[in-house]
Length: 238
Image 1 (cartoon, rainbow, N blue to C red):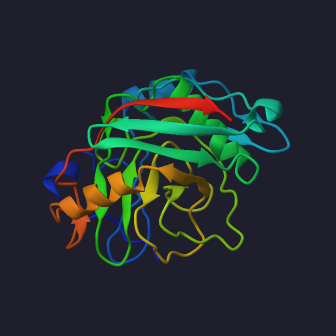
Image 2: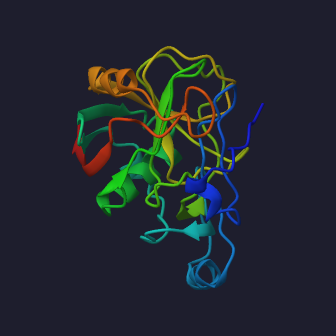
């Protein structure tokens, strides 16, 4: 079940954007596609879809903070790595599931290495029924995207215990830049690509969750009270 976001003042400016949503009581995982001249110009100048036997990256709008479209490299995609997000509330580190979700982890590394997430913030926290913190939108509205989309992965038998890192989407095979951290065991349908496991910083997420949110979307669903500004994302090979 997908629940569309409520129309709040924060999102009213972006009604032409197509939101990407998570399920259940508090809608969470939002991304979007814009219409309009700027987005159309970006799409028209973007390279064609990049395809191989594993991944297809397809040009898409919106193209916020556009860094280009990844060119998939299977050898690089197979290399293990961890990512550390240095935020205003503390650091969060996760191990990328490169074997299980190579297209997704390759995209995340591409964006991180191009400073895509730097100086962005996590814009959504849910504290009822589903327990996640959503990040990865440079516009901070829940409507932003990187200028491309790619298919789902690793969904067979997917579960979302505390410490999971997974993709936001707007339906099947519409992944972009937005992702979420699960800070408490959560039951979701297997529709959101799990691509990481937190190895340090779960306590940071729990502190953020304990601070609450502003209910701007619905009770238990809003902007985190403790601002979560992403200063940078460091990729470490191991």
